[in-house]
Image (cartoon, rainbow, N blue to C red; front, side, top):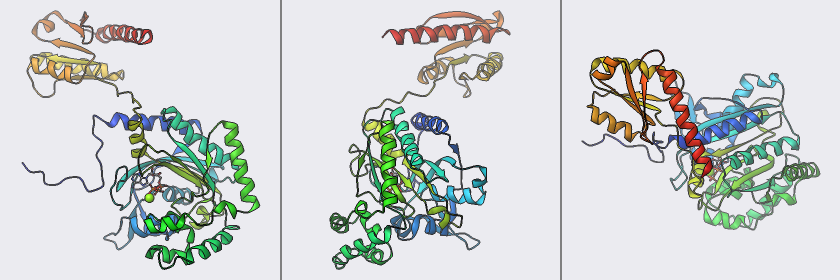
Length: 436
Ligand code: ATP
Ligand code: MG
């Protein structure tokens, strides 16, 4: 039989046998976010197109080349979110979250959509985890945010990431830098790509992250922003570094990082690795003091980061970091005959109610095939219910790893007895683990 279709180019499936890896990363991120005081925000997968044009910036690659934009039947232009910051900021304003007491700290998991050329670790649908802090200009906030990211990587035992830090100034000092960039890039007008030519007058800093080989070669000789930032930005940047030093977070200052989205001001940072080839940026973020105002709110300094889940997972795999496999079936009850199956159905429910994993036959297989399946799913214990067991109202519980067998009654005390055996086996396994 021929499949009628396959997944869309640039998308990926996460299969049941692999989803524990995602869940493990997400659990660590959720816990870390909570301990830093962040609460989750969930926003729609699509927004009005102008949100991203204004929020992300209409001279960015993302907006100029990568957005999935379409017209709805009602004639509105909507766009699948290419990133999470603009939607979260829109929701923050729409629901007046600034009344909740500042700073507001929000975390998110989002799927993102960018019409890019598929490469290793570059997809058209990908996933980000992010943190956002609204309502603080203090360098402590920058340092705390960066520390939170570092702490997530530490907890995942990802050691191979370098933190690179820069300041890209503020509206006060940026005109000077723009002037210097414009002067520099104007010498190469005949070589720049078409997009960058149009950026030259509108937003010359964007030329610095053009991916075309010619433009990026030219960009290597461009003036660096750190030479142009004002005293306030400089002392802010120094202060961020002092806090990071104090927290023992290692970094290098890389004056060439500008980030690909327009909303950034002052601090920008990336966590990069050399273990993933060309797509080495796992996490990027910084301050976006002008974004909230740009979206129609008051001036409200804010900051955040987003990390690419696929890239982080690839990196963990490349580094050989073992992710603990998800929980397996605690008890499989195999049955022969309808009465036994009815009984098993209710016993299994009892086990499940106490948060253990229990399963029985829902296919109508032979006893032999049921036991084969129990083996395949790695059940820790198994039990067979047939006519004999039903008549005697007790059955044999088998520890599938050790082969040890225990009689258990099928009456009201069944769960209690099973649980005692289960705990005993569990603690023995733990002891063995500790001894090795
Ligand atoms: P790049 O320079 O690799 O294109 P970016 O600057 O466009 O990255 P951001 O917009 O800052 O990336 O997104 C934050 C993170 O999301 C990136 O550091 C990366 O880990 C991840 N990411 C971005 N685009 C993709 C993609 N197309 N596929 C997979 N992950 C991505
Ligand atoms: Mg990109």
